[in-house]
Length: 88
Image (cartoon, rainbow, N blue to C red):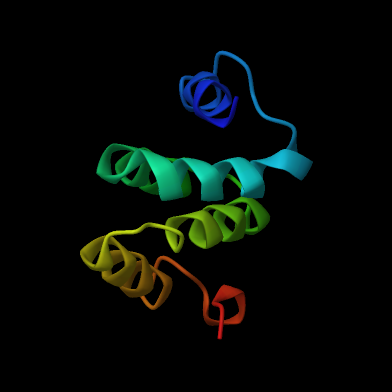
């Protein structure tokens, strides 16, 4: 369910309800690997709210790949994320 929901959400065909997004992002990043990570990162940059960016950052941290986790950490510490929106 999460994989298909994310696919529809990413293509803007059918958006996931905000209450379920964080869970879907975590599951997809955890189980779908680098492709899902790249798609989530693209969603991060086109997100219109910091709340949505925060949901995506949490999901990015659930990768099983150490280099992707490092990339998520670098993103969270970059100027793309306001200091007050970072996770500590």
